Image 1 (tube, rainbow, N blue to C red):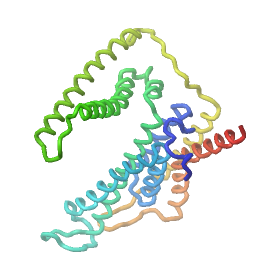
Image 2 (cartoon, one colour):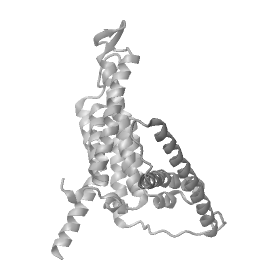
Image 3 (spheres, one colour):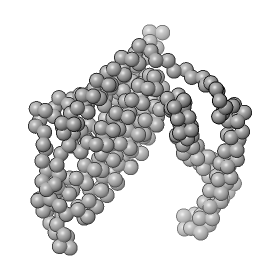
Image 4 (cartoon, helix red, strand yellow):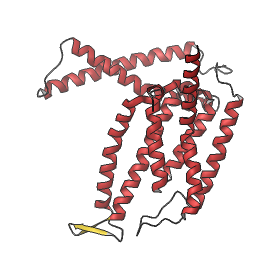
Length: 304
């Protein structure tokens, strides 16, 4: 993948679609990923989720996702057979408890499912900005929409403020060696205290700003730039058709597999393969849209 397609973020072509389209897409993908334990579905969700997180967040996002994914995969794969001794394929005994291959595979599948969902949520956060959340749910559940949008903004804002406070303290000479644990602990407590005071002051300013703009008044209108165009309708139809097809396959059990007492795939490959292909097409849809958009942009720039 070329560097032109890396770290698009909110500039991705898929992000420019109507919020209803992107929200429907991510809800569908995350929902299917949460209830899929088939290795085929898990592998597709994990690999495409990782690829799309790289497209949106760059290689830094890939390093972060892998730094999160690898420990989760290892820990869950190790812990599950230690606490769950079901399965017919006994590998060895540990303190008279059977360690089975089925328990290891189930732990690996559960960890892959969890990591895949987290990566898709990270992509969701890149695309679904606070204004899109408020646009979709502001009129139906305005308080909940505001809380969700503020939470999405609050966490990165706290990280940015803490980083600024920490760098400021270092510039003032308040930097201690690693062995000075007590002094470092006191300094950390001081920085957290500054962060809390700053956040409380900012909360008061936000409250005053909301009141000045008429938040909570009856009949208050809001401005938005989102329009449901023809391409949004077409994309929503495509997503809905593919989603309904995959969900129909899920009801038939193509995304499931039995791990206990033995690993058994209840669905024949002839039935699983068509639904898996549709699911893969659904997963890569935003990647195709973004790559096509970037190619068009590069072509226009080269022509100019």
